[in-house]
Image 1 (cartoon, helix red, strand yellow):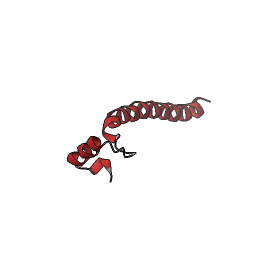
Image 2 (tube, one colour):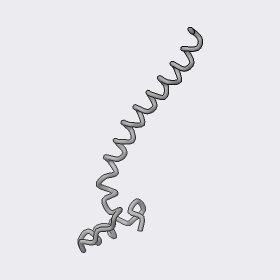
Image 3 (cartoon, helix red, strand yellow):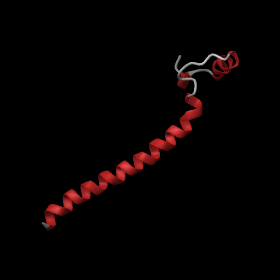
Length: 62
């Protein structure tokens, strides 16, 4: 069962029974994961652009 495509009724039923599937916390942690990816993705993008700029400008002025 993939929790990303699961019916909410099925997820509630498993929660009510107390059965813990390893991926059942997907909905609770999805917002935090998206935020984490956006923040670190922004840092990596800025770092990549900085490296690209330095590697392009440095040989020109050297």
